[in-house]
Length: 249
Image (cartoon, rainbow, N blue to C red):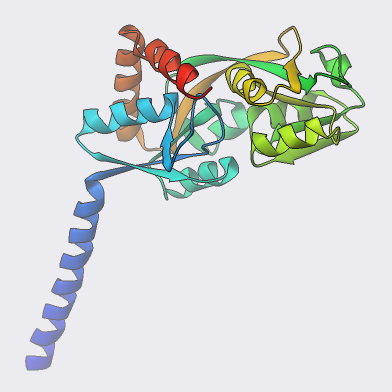
């Protein structure tokens, strides 16, 4: 009888500990990101900041939770939200059909314009078109929408995938690749930090950014959509852009 009572107490204690841990985690909201995509997310000293992090903070404030930022590779962030290891991903995530099968997306909060970055002194690509990229060595961020778009639409000599745009910039300066395809705002930040590079005139393609959550997490998605819509209505996202465009240069 004593052994049975002791066993019940041990089980009760275990469940109590699990409940306490869950309750503690309920006070935190974990966002996955990749802090090499200014002005959306970048490092300011040891802190991850940017437009997406301001949006993430607004979501956490709305929900009365502490925001925890997990900085990781872009592909790793998407995998983490699929598995439920982070609550959501804010990392300049584009919505496409393949991703929508693996995760759910918020309403969009920005229209994204994709451009082509080249070596200013010796541009191997001269036009931001499919034809201009054909037969070239094209750099992209692995898992980024540009990676998927170029793979589906362009017959390149090689599609070179990077985890960080800074790595792609170095290879472009050293003429190891012919160009980089990326979002306009981060491209402007990259060129500002690397005067040996320039952005070609023209738009390669356009898409939209949204926040990703684990498939089926409608409760969190509704909270996120409420905050994003409010930020858009109040013009706050434009303010975030203005602040971080100045700071990250």
